Image 1 (tube, rainbow, N blue to C red):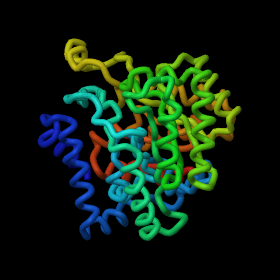
Image 2: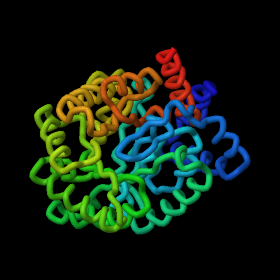
Image 3: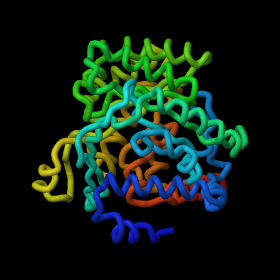
Length: 360
């Protein structure tokens, strides 16, 4: 299973990153539809000791897959079969959109990092929602109620919609996806949609979250867990303000963090990085700042509000560090691209061993 890094270096490292991603996603999906899928589900199933409760939901593992990998909601079944305790699809927008021109996804192999300026390429909420409904029904058939992986939906602003009309645009996605998702995340932190990060300001964020809450709960006929995803580039005072707002609005949690626009402490040659252009940086270089934001948020919001920590997570030790620092759940994404399909299994096995030793 540790053969993947060599396989990646030989097969995928010289290939356009987005093409490699599409091929990998297709292979995982095809495998799930064969008898191999049954084997994978049993081989990769998290140990029962890892079951975690967050915002009223039972997660088979605290480790899940962040938004960005499955933008279309087509790989939910195959990704959960690999051992992720939850899969967050998206980002989904109110209208379908192609995203930014290619190339728009770049590996920094020396840094175990990725730069992306995908631009929320997706099929739109109205087309994604039926896929998610079918996927969750099939998950319910595959797993017992208390072991079913959780499926979240990450929603963002359509590029062509102005900031003044952003709330109405988010509500399109909220109404479509709330009835078919276990939880919703309001993404106001991607650097690849013009003006989006302006919505992180408290005066803009409060009415947006209030409106999404009302719309989501009304469409689903239940309280839908609602979280907000923030950038690592916020000032510490702004992080405190978001934490205070989350408590004020009785949000269910905060996802921290998205990609960064900084290019600090990279091993890759600076000229090479500059030539790749703008975009959000994810992966190992984000580890330090993501952990700082987690610790800051936990101090600001107290013990009860859920925090999903994401950014620079690669190993079981990384996940345990986040959990020990106050994370309720942990997500990864870039590590998956470098570590391969058994990454979640290795994380879960490592977590289970550490918990077993702690109990003993």
